[in-house]
Length: 201
Image 1 (cartoon, rainbow, N blue to C red):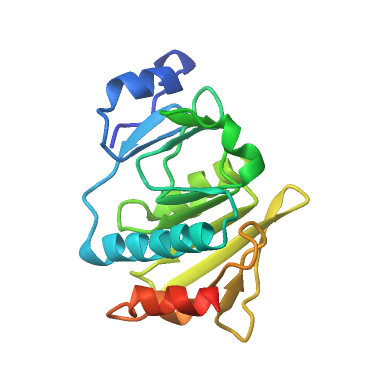
Image 2 (cartoon, rainbow, N blue to C red):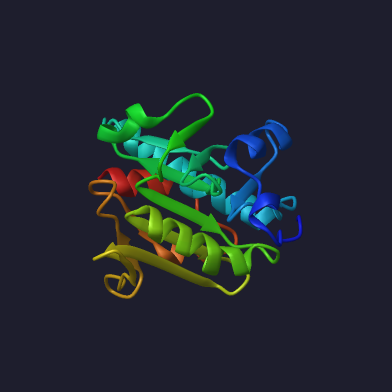
């Protein structure tokens, strides 16, 4: 992780970020500072894969037409901000804003799986960056604290979404898509194919 810059002249731009960070390396550019990601733990990797599989499978089976991106794809929010969410969803009507390298603007839903070194950013800088960019939903999965939060943009500010029956989150961004928090907090995770079939019923 780089140290925060002291002057605007020291801040890294998005274009410089792309030149400095090798392809395939997970990193975020937040307020002109590059944060290189540590290797995923087994649980973080499994959680990210689990949720991404569900979102991609659901989007494909329902023929929604949106796009689900993984953790190596950047979103150019401003000149000095280009986060790479662990998972992101883009609505069909905004897919045209994507290029091979990036998307101009934020996704419609962003998800972060919290690690020890990303906690402050996931709950702080990234949340504020997504909020300011108008990202409609922000999902925070924190396996270390057995904590899950879903935030929805209301009048330009994130509000915590209450869970249905205390454990079900229903997305307003991905039509009909829902997640059971009990799945996400289980060790080991449940069978992902069984969970997808429940979503598709």
